[in-house]
Image (cartoon, rainbow, N blue to C red; front, side, top):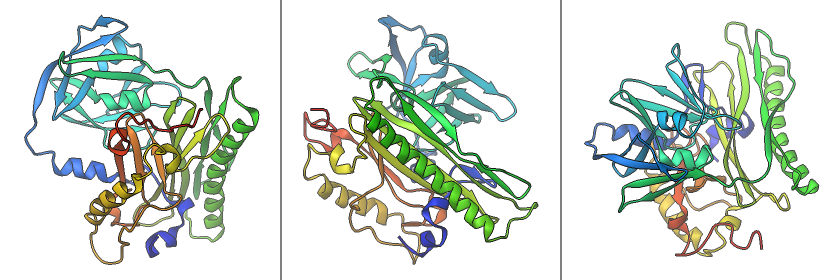
Length: 368
């Protein structure tokens, strides 16, 4: 961690849009740089749901399968609303909601305020489309693509039988400071009580760290009614299947500077015993995963270098920050650790097929 990150402290790093400045993952910047390139669009993708073919069609653009939001609302029963003042769609309910801010052709997506990876939506011929991966990772919908038949088959995911509720930490806001600190808590009749307590304790402790750091900075002074401080966080559930729960916690702070600061932390748990899993637990089926990731990340991370004063990537940390989705594993680094602020939070997603041998499954042996 370099001098920039040490200056702020991990508990005070911010997320989302703060004081008019967006903290955007590198994948977004890479997507923006290629926006003007020619696209390969294939219309007429059939969508099946509950054994029926929907009248609404999907499309493919540059190999990415996009599903019309109208089909989610009309056929799958997923709540969809629109705020004309902010030009923002809200898709979904419960612990994960997609917020899609649209323009004439582009649409930018976050999950509960978190831009977790490249999530470009599209406005095409007056219709809003979102990537199939968003359904799989955040809306509890499994999606299978049949290339030969040009068909997407959608079905409800078999999620863990748990309840996930948002809790808030009490804190008094005023004209000089705003606190909005929350965290997920899980419950379920099939959960081991000790495991439930262990998981909930870790997640609450994360939020308590955000609040404590904010109060410490307030005690040091500097906040004014003209430039009040802000401290808060967001969370999203990235994986909730097969006895595994992966949570993204994103903290934010604004302390009167030119912009806010951000940090993203992944927590992946075994519901059976409450164990906080490491990357080695997820990729146990491939004892050589570090060799591949270290080589690939060195190329990608070093390509972000925008000047002097930033660390060079050497190797994965023992307690490497990551989270898991249905798509694969996302490796996360700190803001300012490897690149200037404008790059946002560097994160890199790898499909399980890239990381595991053929036939290998994530979390191998975890539930045996």
